[in-house]
Length: 182
Image 1 (tube, one colour):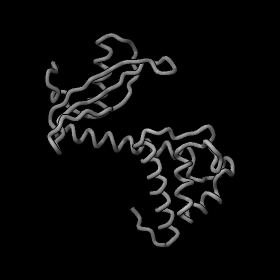
Image 2 (cartoon, helix red, strand yellow; image 1 turned 135 degrees about the horizontal axis):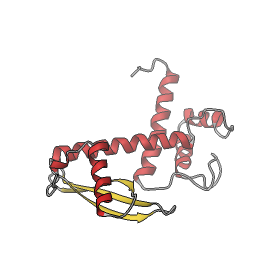
Image 3 (tube, helix red, strand yellow; image 1 turned 45 degrees about the vertical axis):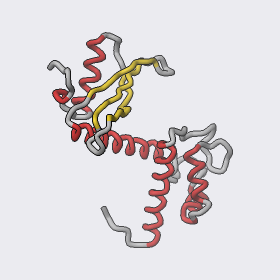
């Protein structure tokens, strides 16, 4: 990582941290990111833009950046777009999953539960919840991991989908799951 050498670079890094904080807070609170429109300075523009506007009231660098680059149309990089917001969300999702997987591996043993329901597009989704004893405090812990698309509702299909995700994506050893016959 390159160390910032100027005040402008430091301010830019603070701006990125501020944006990351807005994304993290919105996600932590389970709030929707987007509003009815995606323009700064308009009503109902969502929690993400609303938080950035709020912080910009106290942060002159962010205020100047918003005034200069936002709502200028496509082709201009503002680094505040929904694409950047979604990239931050993806990075945080990866970090959360990595943390959960690390805890599960430290715990030694785990189990999981699944539930299936069609989403708004009528695609069957399997909800995957993992359970383990926290290595930090010894308490039972239950964490949502992901939604998995189901091809069909047979037991074999569900098992294949879950086992493949756990072993391939998460790289967790199924032998650490009590009751597993492999």
